Image (tube, rainbow, N blue to C red):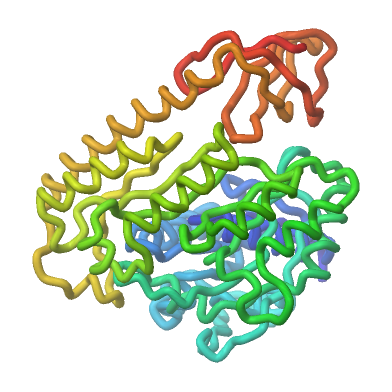
Length: 433
């Protein structure tokens, strides 16, 4: 087969981004050339998200755009939307191949079996899948941070979430394969890795003699790896044993994205979340006792069905009592196929917007207060961009705070220590020591 140009359009989470990078590597290994999504290409791969109906809509829009850019192009739609609604995707004009959330390692072969207006659907029952699909990245843009997928699936079944039906049961990547990939990306020049998964806290629960903290301890021994960062975690994972062992993982970055969704126990129960606000706060206490300057970030959904003003006020007060370093606020969006879709007492959009704005304002105040704590302190920064012949640089601290550094002779992809002098909006300003 002659060399083709292949463009990717990716929606959704960091896991999707990893899977796109892995599929890119497959096409490159096949002798194809990867181009930007805005360019005319022979093949378009759309890696979809279906958390909300907006993701489905964006996927359909890009399919139409792809066929406008090149009417002769082959179009493959993969990922969560394709898994949840394969027949709907198959029926769209211009789609040649539909792959769900498995079998993506064979995408090059599957595309080789279709041409012109032919269509092929390869979507099985994801609930019958129990093996982790091995995909590997060769490299991503930049040379500092690599996202690595180590876990698939979710068994939580939160009442608002479609993802367990799109991703199936929990599956964990073999530790040997994780370590091998980490060594490979480090050999490519990466200093930092971010471990991701659909439900990262479930890592190892389907295996013997491995869990997330044990894996972190093993990765801490990888030579030339400087930093290990984690994706989203459930508060139930954070207990005294986990934190005590984590403190000995010296490459760990003290940034914790603790999933919350609501600060009201009544709402948490309706969401089918598996913890209370008291349990959540205990996790926060354990983290701050061990890591006083830790960044604790979270997500909050406002306007969940049945959320009264009193419930929202409880959430607002709880959020303020935690004092997050960063908080992402989402207005509840109905998703067909979930239990919450059929719940009574759906909230008016104007009420959702008002509540959202209140939390966004509170989030900004908390974030500024967190950043102010670093003024006058020394922080380690992994430099990502350097300009002015090494005099100006921008990078990230271990707590994932953007830091602009002034100095001499600085180089990209190196670790430096700087003294923080000031804060400008959401970034710190420092001098090289």
